Length: 78
Image (tube, rainbow, N blue to C red):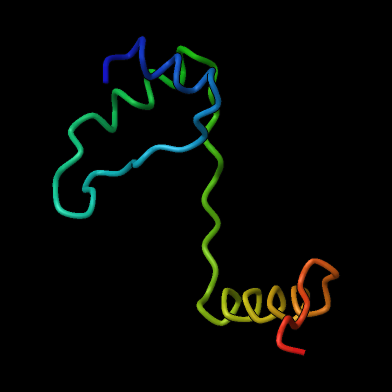
């Protein structure tokens, strides 16, 4: 996708990209160009937060507990 199309995609609502030196199975030679495009468009990437696995696990468990007590979910088998 050329830069003009990328800019239009972001302004139309795209909110993420695959970014990094290496994607799952291939190199990403344009990582630098992505950051340059962001700078020209005034887009500031979110900072990545690093947490231990235990923190992620606790957050998932808490979300499950909250969902069970939500009015959006009910036991249809009853």
